[in-house]
Image (cartoon, rainbow, N blue to C red; front, side):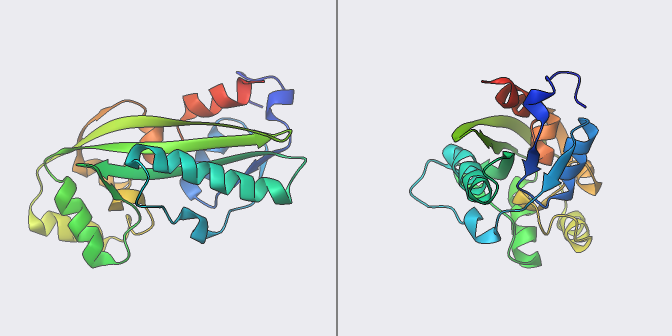
Length: 194
């Protein structure tokens, strides 16, 4: 049971994700929930959208997909993207793209955006959190060695701030949990809204 919410605000929760990081954060918050992931194809974004709106749009899409199948549940969905110089870096297609992503982020600052959507009672509430992440300068060998660990293969921007990827980072300005994939404060705020 989460101490910051009423029992009614946290009953019948369904997490629309199979992300181990999101599951771990939800469990750490004391939530009792079921898991019903949305299909991967819902993560395809549209190039004509503002890059900072994509994560929220994708979270809403996932949330509403699962809510159609679970109409009596309170569904939580999230989507995380990395934005650098106006370009969106999603999950890498392969290790070559992962190396290119990490090389592009090395020695500079990028924005991690996580959109969160919650649907219950036929109503969807959504929002997005932004966090600035600055990477250390990295050698080509360090980049190749990190990518070879495989840690970033299923993550936006090709890195995991909570794992070995912590060694890539010089500074985080904003919510650390947002970088991991589920901004805790935003989730609690959305659950509290009636």
